[in-house]
Length: 116
Image (tube, rainbow, N blue to C red; front, side, top):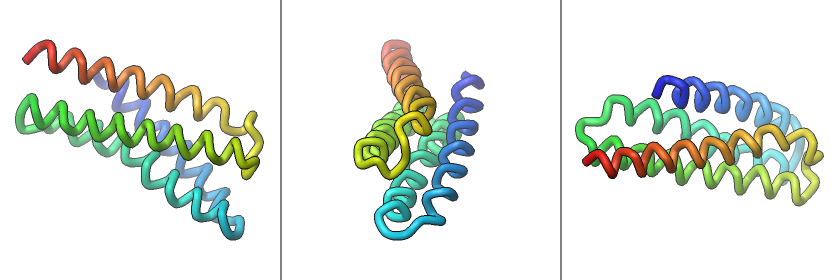
């Protein structure tokens, strides 16, 4: 379980650095960066909160929120790529990591529901 905490924390750091770059730009880039920052850092925050869940349903709920945020993050990354705000090769590793986090978090939720 600790691996997911580290991965989401490291992912948040990468998102913050990307958003700092987008913040230096004008207009749409800055707005997209703000959306990405909120969603991308929320994944790890919810994973962290889940570790202190008061109950199994609370744990599952926090992970469900993390999953939604991971999907939203992937959406923003794809949108930034599709609109050529940044080149695809700059975002491909982040997109891959977001996809992997989605799969891992979904698996954690399924496992937790089975163990109820």
